[in-house]
Image (tube, rainbow, N blue to C red; front, top):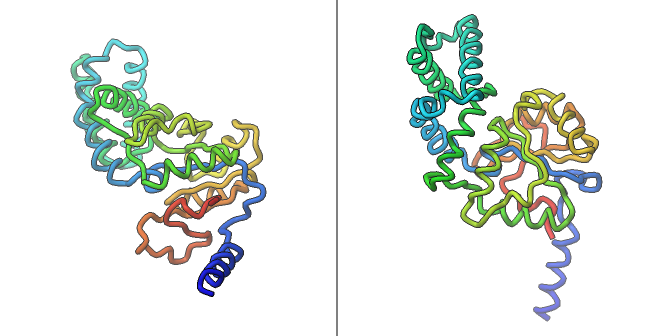
Length: 266
């Protein structure tokens, strides 16, 4: 009697599984990184401090590189905008290459401390992290359910895409060096702020167009409510990812998940 009863209960649970979104149209899963696939502490306590420590030395080593010099010019232009906006960035001195280099380093460190999303900073950080990953000083980190979910979703024919304020290079380096192995073969595309800000609906339309899908074919996971709202405005299905199970999503207008186990389970 016990065996059949347990079997019946299991069948009942399977039948009554609650779906958090309309699964039928979803052909691609778009993922944020910080707080969604990767612990926030890895970004704020490992990656950001590493870039800040290495920034001036990296600029000195690469000051003759045309792309790095162009990024320094973009820093100067961005700093002027920050000053005009009353943000009080560090002073900028441009009378010599040495002064320009030091000003670039100080301003870059100022941006990092404020978690700036400006594109030249993210590009520069990616290049610095590339050296760190190559030397073994840095290793990518993801939540334990992520590699399993990636394998499951790819097996089911879902396209996995990443959208982060960090550069596409930085994304590839992170997912390519996690302890369980290289996850980049599971990922169809990487998107950064080159397509636009994550809080703007048009960015999600551009991402859909880039992979020849409709926005309705996407499910977007993020821990940021403004990003969720922007994606929904573009016609994307969304789930708010709160990795802290004790966190409350008060006033949330979307479903909340704490891990990836309930997303297209088998």
